[in-house]
Length: 272
Image (cartoon, rainbow, N blue to C red; front, side, top):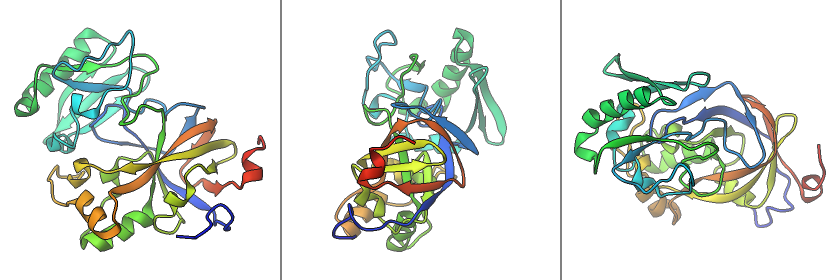
């Protein structure tokens, strides 16, 4: 890593992929483009969650709760076997399991939520601490952190970790919103408190490294817990971090293929 990241020239990178996760813990949805808004997550990202027994979540006064209150990959690896799709207009969630549609429901209706809850009551039975319940609150995101953020994964860092692990490491293990290519491995950690520009107008501030948990041990295709990612990170690099969180400070449309520019101090003070 450069000794003076604030002054060193930084090459432009590129958005390789965009993903959202409409329901916490369930499968990602690739997006060709999306619209970022200041202080918000990607649209519909972690918009819903499946409560694993009584969580204390209050839809009338929503607040951050730890991920252990919900069904999630860290403890419920079988979720990776499901393939889900979410329709923005109808808020209908479709769940495919074993090559067939296993459940479908409009998450805005009691009937639709009940259909999804019945599926998880059977599918996740041994993992449940109580009846599963679909949760949502207007404007709330069930993120792993209290702040509304966009998660960024540097694909060169994933490649370096792959070499350390001695096995393929799918970037989707890290459940990031933006996959970025063109930065050196681990360069994203040099960019804390720096601003980046994506596309014609969007601007984000990188605010936090992402500490990885056992969810990354789960193969996103098979649901098998097959790689000790946090342990490999700690053993090789002395930390368990991969990826960074960023806050949107200026909105705009972004798309796969867009240039990612790191702004210098003077640029970050100027509007587009």
